[in-house]
Image (cartoon, rainbow, N blue to C red; front, side, top):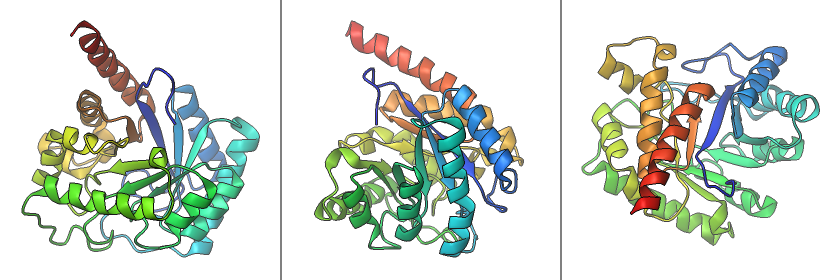
Length: 277
């Protein structure tokens, strides 16, 4: 999963959906999707995360067949036309979609439900011996922003992720194949997101690689008085730098070049500090 120097890993988002919150409809055509994948590889992406179902607030679920028709041709085309080695993750809560994607050339599962929507997902990850991202989410994408509430968001997210780790380990998933995601923006209020970002080290201290996904999210726009998600590239890069300083290792982003720069500079600062202590 990680290179020998342990530098931050950039996961580039490739949504082949008509309705994702920021880039919906841009890459539904396979030619456009492949061009975007090629661009991300040139900009230094480590993982391409391909999703066929929008998980924006209020989104409806998409059938298994529809998800497959969207993602499988893109995965196959990346493998045959661009790279046999670039890592590909499949963004889905369906074990059937995940299995088909793994067979087509994907090698990581990114499940926003952490195996709760489809209880076969954890078994599948074990059988294929692949990394799986376990994310925290309060509610479902359709309802998660209706009225999210926490008493202590950091403690509650940690407790939930700890439970998901236990379930994954019970299913036979190896420790090194478990990645945690605090689920920024998934059933969280603005202050909940900010508190999680301020205490990312507490999640890192659980002892598993952590994935941070803040890319272009609405809560940052409310802080910057920006309504257009595509204009939140700098804000996203700031959170990437914050994450690196807290020990986060993976970053799921739309804008690879800018976040690659932010991550590498923050990592270099951390590395110098560590070597001179």
